[in-house]
Image 1 (tube, rainbow, N blue to C red):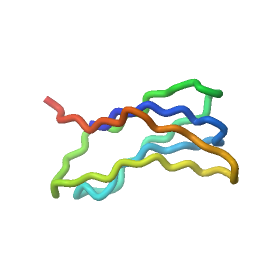
Image 2: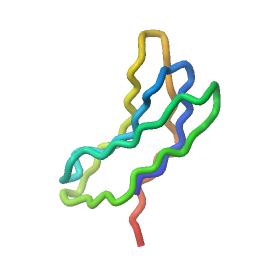
Image 3: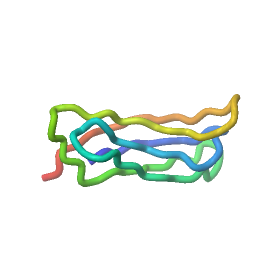
Image 4: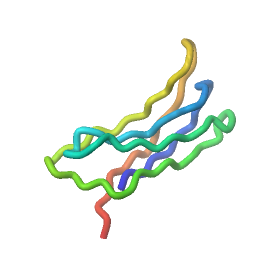
Length: 79
């Protein structure tokens, strides 16, 4: 499971937290910009890491001079 905190800053929606390169199809969760410093907690569940690695990222589709923050990202083993 991936858990992260994100604040879209000035980025426009949609924003995406994604997991790839783990041995399966890329997993994506979309979330919206709901305001300046309105931190959100996107989560991706049920990741089975089959090859010993996982790429985690934040994708922002927006015009120039915008930003978003991704903080306290964690990859946790389900128990």
